[in-house]
Length: 403
View 1: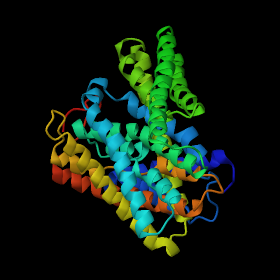
View 2: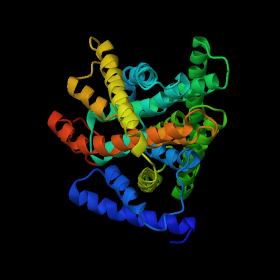
View 3: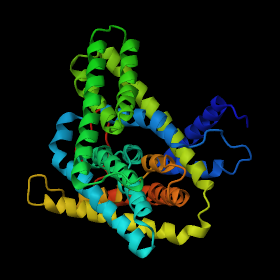
View 4: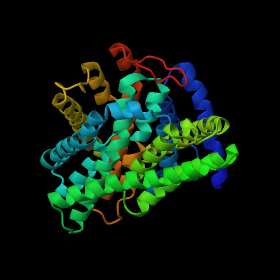
């Protein structure tokens, strides 16, 4: 096929539409179907000319996916379980990263820098994979809010840990206090960027009478908040999440017209579908191009490390809150454990490593392997698990009620 990017996008969207129809008939998770379709697409003689890069994921795909999910998030429900999600997104990510890094260093003989780098890349759950999978499975209630909000919040911790590891590898100063300060700045600054950009978008949208103009302001809020935060090395995911929650909750109180509100929801639902489709198709294509044969043992070891680390993160974090009113039921803990998927976010960080970074190629291959296991194996087994645990209750539009 032609190397024209527009034709490549059109071809991939055609595949996405067909996969969506087929996945619905086969009751197959959409993200799994897309990844498998990408693997098959990679066998074509002329591949779509859209290479999967860190810049593409961060600059194009991530903002609309985060914004669309945040737009639907109810602030009262999000705030109600904030202690749980904060515990998982901080203590949980640190604990998981430590277990993965220790396994890579002591059992595989890796150096500390590549061990810690890989651990940080794949320990935090990915909002793209989590949100799309849970939406596809129509999971509602508290467990849906816990899993999705954690995946959004833990970006801040992962970004700080990633920055610390890169600074250490470059010989920069790394202390506990500098790490804490960097965490506060990254998280707080990202939230501030989202609040400022979202607030301005709300103010301007409230003065507009044309729903197309209101729609434009939400687009500016989604990308503007993310890019502003990333420009200052802050959390773009938290910035976009904050902007989305602001527009989704305050906008519903009258800042955005009824006509505009309906247009905004429909528009972002479609944009989310397109971005989600393209990113997982490209992940599948990229997976097919990886050479896993010589490192199958290493990949299997990392999958085991990540699984053990995730289990420790969830069950330890929840145990600390077991006597409080924020107690998480065993069934929900199991969903949090197995539903902690990895995806585009880890790949973006891995693909963005400097060319001369120690073990860069191996780190990228291992990250792809963990993502493949997460999306395909965990994705395929999520429905039976949710059904068995009794938390896979269907949701109707506008009713994210309890499962």
